[in-house]
Every structure is written in structure tokens, then in C-alpha cells.
Image (cartoon, rainbow, N blue to C red; front, side, top):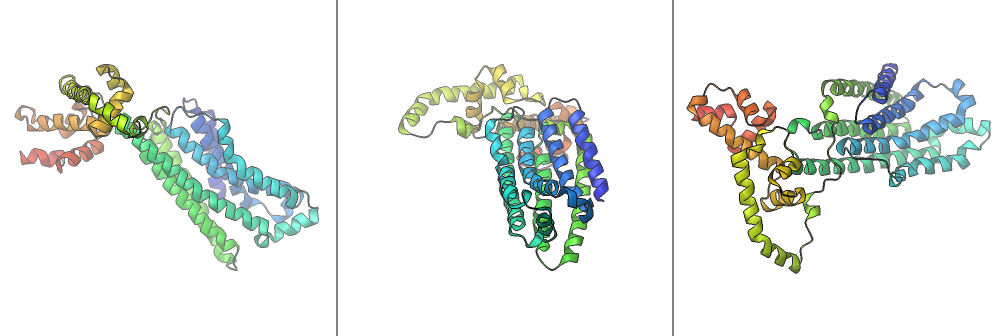
Length: 373
């Protein structure tokens, strides 16, 4: 299982590095994650006789585990936000790796071969190894929180600026993050067994973890091949409405009172445009495109919809789509239209998303709604 897992991961990493795509950074980050996974996994094949001449290399291999979580976190960020680029501040993620190697330099790398071998043979009882395992566990907890905070922000930005649910990668990223962190938390539990007397249980825990890792790796390959659209990001320069709005103060309240008439007229003009021009029929409509059409700056339009109308852009547009779908379902002359034809007609491109949105506004499925007429 380990060899299969290593080979599949290596093949996928090679594919991600060499494939021609606009999302090169995200692909290379995930390829780096897979390579680090491989480096960690090959420890299973290393025996004591082979390791004697390469102990420093083996100790260094241990420390590369502290790069796994940072690489996965940066991968999630790069997939979520198309404009993500490496900056100097991102070097902060390498601090655990550098710190561990500095500690190992004085505590391991410079020891004699006999002392190194003694440490290696009794590593489970050594405080340095115990500390390193604790560091990895803390990393997993902190980065799991960080990843889900990034996904939360991504979901909010997506709802405020996009309408096409098929291009959303939130569910995919949430799934892969949830599954990966479940595996890593299980890994923490498995590593605790290393420091106990239950050696056989620890060995079998490794077997189970290898089996689960293989399944997840193969699942990722199949998912990537079947759904290439999952690797599109959103503009990293977009801001949430709550970040655009100024902080409340007396002056701000006075300004809003003065602009209330302007805001009301803009809302009326927007709703009139939506009703007459029906821009929502475009399944890939974004707030930037609507802004260009109605000639309202995108920041103002975002505040208008998300704050003053108190709806996400996603829900605001879908409400018009559902209203049009309801009108078609009510029209006796269009009774021959199937639900699938109607959802494409009103701007949806997924039956599941259409049914979900329709039920949200009517508490009925499209078919049930038609039957009640």
C-alpha cells in the first residue's frame, strides 16, 4: 500500500508540475505537498542497516514534516484567490522548520556516529523527538483553524460577487481540507501510541493510515480529472462589504442620511434594470459585469446589494431567476417545458443548485410547485 501510495503521489506531482495551466502556483504548491508526503512516507522502507551511514539525512527528513502544513495552507489560499503571489511575509511559515534544524544542529547533527545511532534507536524516549512530535501536533491544530478561516472568507466573497455555483470551489476545498485534517488528527493519535508500550497497535495504526492515505490520494486524482473547473480562483483584490463600509460614527450617520435618497433611487434603478434587461439570464454573471452594465462602481454596487438590500449578490440574482422560473411554470402555454429546460432558460446551469434555490424561496421543488398550480 505504501509503495502504491508513493507511486500515485509521485505521478500526480509530476503531472501537476508539467501540465500547462494558468493556475501554475497552486499546482506547484500541491505538487510540493505531495513530494513532502512522499519524503515522509518513504520512512517505512528505511531499515536500520541502511540508515547508519545517512543519519543526518534521516534527521533532516524528519524536519521536512514541519513544512507540510504551511504548504497545504498556501495551496488552499492560492486556489481560493487567483491573484495570490509569494511575498516575503510568507517566509514566517518556515520558522518551525528552521528552528527545528537549528536545534538538531547542536543536539544531533554534530554528534558522533555512535551517539547518533544511540539517539536513533531510542528516539521515542528522547526529549528532542518528543518536542518535535508536539510541534507537529500544534502545527496541525493551528493550520486547520487557519485553513477553515480562509475558506470562510472565500465563501463570503464568492456569495457577494459571483452567481454561478458550478464555478465555486468552496465545497471541494472544504471536503479535501476536512478529510485531510481528519487524517492528520488521526495521525496525532497514532503518534501518541509511539510513546506507549502498545507497539503492535502502533504498527497496525500505521497500516490503517497508509490505507486511508492511498484512498484519499486516488480520490483526489479522480476528482481533479473529472472536475477541472474546481481549480479556478476568485480575484484576491475583492473586499467584503463589511470591510468597505466605514466604521459607524455620528459623521457617517449624517452622510448616510444625506445619501438615503440617492441610495433609494439607485436601488429602484437596479431593480428596474434587473426586471427589464434580465442580466441574470447570464449563468456566469458577476458583480463586476453587472457594475459595468448599470454603470455603478463595483464597490458602490457591492455595498448597495450586500448592505442596503441586505442580500448576498448570489442570493440577489438567484431570486430573480427563481421568479422568472415561477412565471414559466405558471404559464399554461409553456407547460411542455421540462424542469431542465427551465433552469437553463433562467440562468442556472446545474439542476441541483436550481432545486436548492427554488426550494429556498418557495419551500417546494419545481415539480411540486408545478403540480400545485
